[in-house]
Length: 187
Image 1 (tube, rainbow, N blue to C red):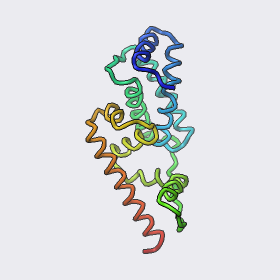
Image 2 (tube, rainbow, N blue to C red):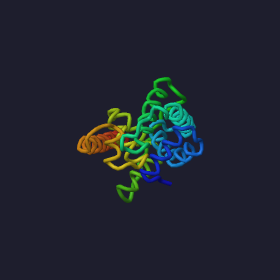
Image 3 (cartoon, helix red, strand yellow):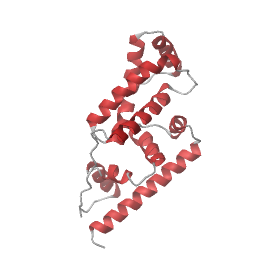
Image 4 (tube, rainbow, N blue to C red):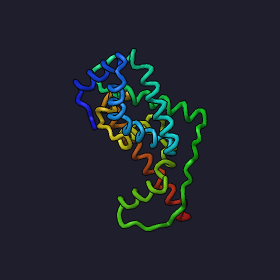
């Protein structure tokens, strides 16, 4: 469910005035994307659920001081989510490192290989080789399903910079996978 910008501003104003139903509608419209973004960052569904709850509790507390800037509320929520995720990882959370499984499987196509790697958690493992900014771009683009323009707003960067970060992140992932392949085949 998405909310038109005009409707969203009206809901924000109502929620700022203490209307719980308006806040519930804002939650419904945005919670899934925040959860998916956090799941990509934290890897454990229980951790992503905990931090999603924290994000909306903080949003409820901070909403009275929120000023609509023309960008959608989700941009503000992603900033809160990013900060919460960073704090959660610093505290250690319940975060488990994803083990990379050694496989010498053969794939019918590159797409099959990527899907298999995603299933085995290798994407998450390989994300460790990326910079924080690269990880943030990939999480927002592919887990939270945002456009380049939306990611640029959330991260407060120009669209060209976001495109470059995405390109360099995908190139780095490919390099990591190629190294893993070489080591698992004993080359």
